[in-house]
Amino acid sequence: MIVLEVVSIVTGYLVLYYFIRRKVPNTFVEWTYNIISVVLLVLAVATLGLLWGSIVLVVLILGTFLVSGIQMAATWEQIYTDIALHTGLEKDKSKQFTKELYQSHKACKATGLLSVSRVAQRLAERNRTPNEIRQMLPHITMFMIAHQFEINGKNINKVVDAIDSILRMFGYQTTQTQRVVDVLTQVDLRSPASADELVEGFRTFLDRE
Image 1 (cartoon, rainbow, N blue to C red):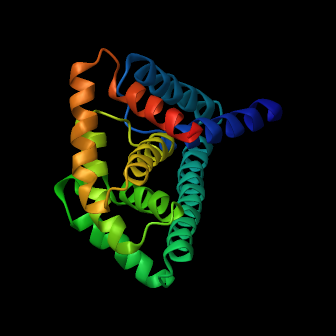
Image 2 (image 1 turned 30 degrees about the horizontal axis):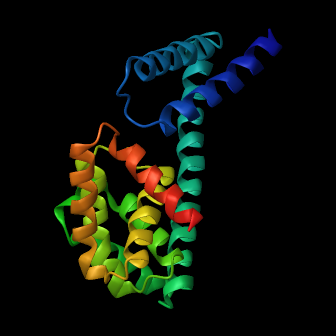
């Protein structure tokens, strides 16, 4: 019985942790995953009885949010430090910088502060100055939204790398980012390939140059 309770607590914590950390489900598979997560959590806690099950559930929720909060704080710290390191801004100013970027355009607000900060971080890693980042970032976020890219670290790096590389390859100024985005959009409309495939193709080609 003790073993079962221990297994229930561990299972409940793991299931709850991944359930809370996941994004809002969009597909049947994701909905199924979340439903199964809830069922497993209820079964795990139910084996302990009403009183202890309730206590363990509260502890699991608090513990999960605490761990998630610590991880999120570490993520923000890394982003702000990275932007400050590559742009020469002080860390406090890099925080204000990302907030200003977030407020600068509807597309930025639509993607969220964290995603905007990650785009700024990637541009900073590619040695773009704060002013260049201001000029490029709204167009990049609009492109990702318009072409229905899932806003995650992998896609942010892929799109930023491709657009930045095209600008550098043709000697364009960052004020011409919209021009590059428009060309990619037109190619996407006239090509059987998806925007994701086009961006990946451009990035692969440019990486070889």
